[in-house]
Image (cartoon, rainbow over all chains, first blue to last red; front, side):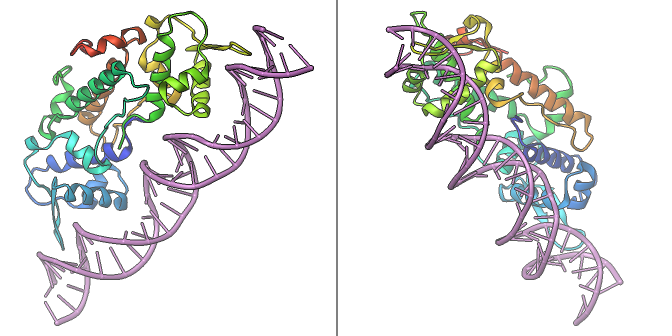
Length: 134
Length: 134
DNA sequence: AGTATCCATACTGTTTTACTATGGAATAAA
DNA sequence: TTTATTCCATAGTAAAACAGTATGGATACT
């Protein structure tokens, strides 16, 4: 059981790739696909979702492509995942009418959110152990 | 998108219910179903998985039921989830051949494991905010 | 023997996943 | 102005997972 689908992984990988472009030309789908090894057609759908969620802007036509809609320090991993997978984990812990379990799941939920609130610009720092304490 | 299926929620709810029995008689499926409002037939499957993972023992025949296979302080939420959902999140963060993302996902994975390493016996304490720091 | 309980397997309708396919719309370059 | 390039939108699809339901069998207590 994979707790995150490849959509989430792909989405973050694509956004990360775009965020690391040095020239400020828009990045093309085929470039991103080549870098990330995501299928071109599938990637298009994900990028489309990311654009509709206002995380990317697109330029059509020759020399077109995608750019971040905001700077990388204003885009969180959570936003990316939610953009491609739909609204995130609302755990229905209300099973057995147990307040204790409700608290537990709600706490898990908060911790999860905290983990994914890391910004795109901070990703490269995650190689430093325990950088992003929650 | 729910990050945990109802199977996981159900599994934990069932195990928690069993762990809170005061008399030391085995707890019957119908009792657990009544407490948790999980469908009887479906619950049987989940309990069966939990038994096969050696988290529960069963007693057949009249007055039979289920008991914990070990004491509640030796059973983690992670084990329960893995028993009903299959081996947990091995995130394939190896997309785009980016070491940075690999580190990120691996870190997320560790944090997730830490969150779910809480023992069944400790669950009731989760109502105390920030009890189980990771 | 009869009843209560767990056990095993199979079936089912719906949704999600991870794509592929097709063609259209916009824009830049020739 | 044509053509090539790029994104855009929609639909289709095979396989798996989800959340059950259904049926009957095995075991053990009374």
